[in-house]
Length: 191
Image (cartoon, rainbow, N blue to C red; front, side, top):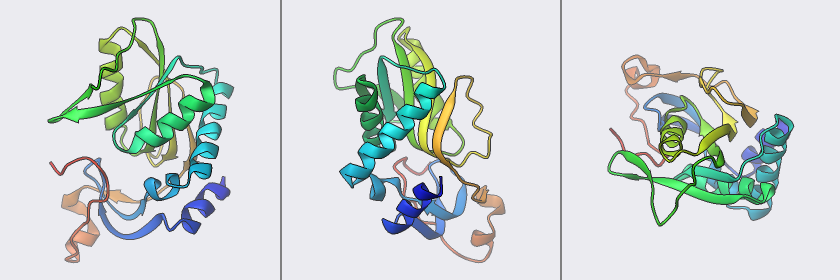
């Protein structure tokens, strides 16, 4: 799906530098999905594509949930493509929660949608919130999979683009060793 990467490049959303990812890892590249999703036509197209891939895997939800901030827009567009409800989780302190009167019924089928999956930590946090309500996680979708196959989800996972970008823990980051300071473009607060 080189057209996906081409769209990121055209939108100025493939960034080069030294980044602190939401996962806590460091990287020399960052895909700024918000820069792509601000174009409503692209957001709608990408949401339909993620939904199509999930449908092809046999995944059809009642509800789509995206974690704030990165999963809100793409989650909404995937939900639109399915004709499903669109909810999002957000943090209260360090805990991911459903707020704003959002709720799930026991047994509802839910897909979690992210902008980027690196370690899968945020996705697993959302899955725990869903499972605590008695609803059932039936799949995960994302724009970008940069997990290197290490996401570890036990449900079908579909993404539009798989990228292999080097990441490092801070202690072994060559950019840090060279004296560079990382910038944090994501939404999770620094730990």
